[in-house]
Length: 568
Image 1 (cartoon, rainbow, N blue to C red):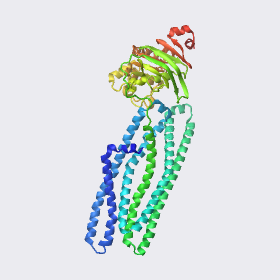
Image 2: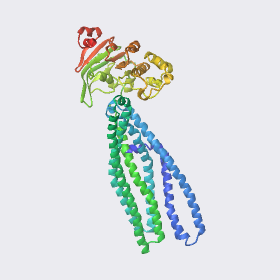
Image 3: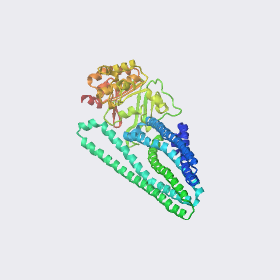
Image 4: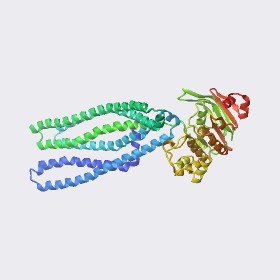
């Protein structure tokens, strides 16, 4: 995991090395100040070397001006480096989100994933910038101060730095409890984000059912949980900081007592003791840096653990190295002994399912809820993989095709249409980002949405609102259908694609559908039998698989399930 974290410095080596060099020079300047003070007090003042005092003062002024410039570089460019590392991680994590399977999103809440890519990465960015810099500065200060103070008195130096080690041990000991508390806050923070995102998305449903108070009560549960976890985190943080602050005060007290004894017995001079005091004052800053650094490490690493876990989830559905492209398929689809279950086998949907669809054939799928109609539509483009058996297109198992070429060849309109926040043009263009304005208009006309769009003041540049809130259900589905016309797929899968359309609109676009699927394989899933009545074959699915199969007239002659459905 550490190797992965370090790898993100690779693109920013120049800034990192300059940052470390600047930090080194700042530390060196800080180490010079007590030495200069000791020389002034111990040599120049007793010898009345006024010129040397002035020269040293001017020299120190110049050096501190240089230090100010170095400090600006470290503060500015160091944070920029952290921001760039955060940018790189966010890009990689977003790409990973895009690569992961449907199954991943079945198990994760949106708010949790949002916290991974926002607040978690912000803390990682702070850790990426401050921790190497603080560790380096503190190391230089400790080593430099220890070496110089040893030249004054080894015993007193060893006593003082032994107590510093005690402070470091205390901090290391308390960090585990702080880490546990920080992890708890992270977990509940993700749940809080999810609850807020879910409640805001469903605000219209909440108001329709007068459930505002119910939502407030549910929110309060997770809100209280977040407050409790934060309270525990602050308690651990308080113990951590107060304990370290106490030990730092004890370090100063130790220096006064032991140093005073050394001065009394003339082991060191009062000026030497003052030099020790200045160094201890200077060392307080790197000690505080180390203490704060440990807190940053807890926050950053708890976030990086989540980042690392997601980044190392391998998509189950992906293209193999020897996969082939699906180019201009004839559209023959064969389901062979297919078994499929959701939730790792807990919810069996298809059992030994067999079906052969001929090239250019229009298949209608009907059946009660839960028999696997939508599942079939999701298995063909490999949104999920079959548990056993196989699905073949043009005689080749779809798992042998490059998954992207497979999905390019399939036009899929799902039951729940998603509309992105943006313009109507943007949403139609999603079917083919390279399409021209003329092609967008043509697709909209064929989906019978063009006249509606033209009637709007902003036309195709009208914004849809969050998740298409400004559109009706039928308008959303016609936008999705326009995407399909724009994509021009070789295989078409319509999962309840006309369910939200009124009868008039459905009739208007039915001829466009027929034109779209001419010469192509089409699978149409519908509750409304009028949508599939002209299919080449109609398949009636039941709990145990295919219950009836044939064209409209053949099924009517059977006077079975299909016949009874039409009579209802």
